[in-house]
Image: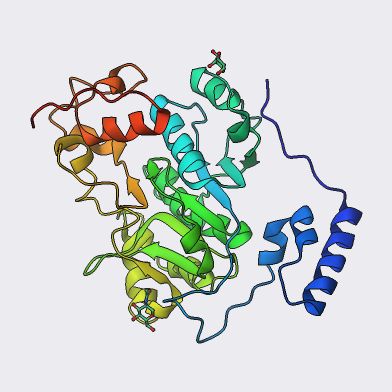
Length: 327
Ligand SMILES: *[C@@H]1O[C@H](CO)[C@@H](O)[C@H](O)[C@H]1NC(C)=O
Ligand SMILES: *[C@@H]1O[C@H](CO)[C@@H](O)[C@H](O)[C@H]1NC(C)=O
């Protein structure tokens, strides 16, 4: 069975809704309820940013639509950990929509964990599938052959946020808390002290001024470097000169590669204060001595897994916690 595609409002209903919405918005200076009938995102699209936008306090209402975006190039199957990530986004943040952007034509939501997703009507009703081709080039420069999916995803996430606005998450970013506090800013990105930005999480309005600049940094594309265009170049070319273009998040999106291994190695690791943590799951093989014993997590082995990743997932899925063992 194919995935459900969104039902669309008729165009006239949309136009009338927007007209009524704008009228009441200009007359009474409050957020008009009828706009919610049309689309919250439509309203947010009208936001324009100017010099002096306060990147420290943001504004007093939501200007980022409550849409979570995931990119799944070449692989639409869900594994247990993919399911966990989607559930964490759903339960801990509660988005209005979850968009899966994939280059798989006629993507099917099949397999055990998609069945689990479908079985959760609150979650399933929020999911939309969007077709998106993997980029092959940027400003006339071909993407790295070996890293095309990854470099293509780096580019696509910026384009997606520029198109829709919302919350972009890597497929291994575990949401721990509501992200609503970031929905009052033009663009929030994790940029730790003395480091380069982490592009695993981008929360922004589609009109955020940094987005076109970010894409422009690809005029110099280094296909031979893993994270030059993903993080290094936008940090140097944009953030060093215009830090006011983002709400700088230090640590709380958990994108620091030094932090993530604690989930698998350090029983004392404190994760509860974070908003998100990057699970770095694909890299476990390189540094986790327990990788060979448990290369793949599933709903059975997670029940007793003695490291924080186990505790986090059990808490999310309502599984009982085993008695603590000494570390
Ligand atoms: C779907 O949910 C129901 C009720 O929670 C449960 O009984 C059933 O086993 C679930 N089915 C699948 C495929 O998970
Ligand atoms: C806001 O922008 C200023 C530069 O104007 C920058 O120094 C500061 O770190 C930014 N604050 C946050 C929270 O991003």
